[in-house]
Amino acid sequence: MIRQLIAVLALAGMPAALAAQSQQRLSIQGSGAMVFPTASESGFENDTRLGWEAQLRYTFSRFSLGAGYQQATVYKFATGDFTGAISTLFVEPRYVFAAAQRTAFYAAGRIGAGLLQCDPEQACAEQAWEPAYGGGGGLLFLLGTRVSIDLGAQFFATRYTLASGEKASPGYFMARLGLSIGL
Image (cartoon, rainbow, N blue to C red; front, side, top):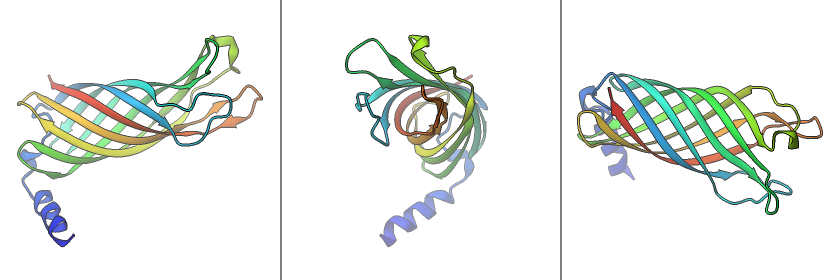
């Protein structure tokens, strides 16, 4: 345990130029995701679901700031054609706290607005954009001066209106694999 702590502290002290984020100030990132509900959803399949996200990121060395859009199917009936997806507009600050030459560990937070989108639309109560938040971390693998792979995980939550008119605030765990390209 002491050796791992010393290694992490030594990596954290490396120059910012070694941080394995894109070496370009501006980059775009696209990711595919697997979404896991954190609580049982009455009447719905409780399986792993799929999602995706896209973001534009500005890098200041170890710190970067991204803005983007995330969508994940969160509800699905075992029978029938109903699906519910959470769409989220977000801002994501990220900090690389430990880096080697081609790998970096980061922590990130998210804040934004989420909307439940139902298909068919009339199967849900009227929805409005609600506060959304999340946080997590991951690993960046630098493939070249303009390209990196992002293997990350996060928790995210938002509010939406149930058919009964009550507000729900469920949480979800998301694992993602992304590709970032410096512009």
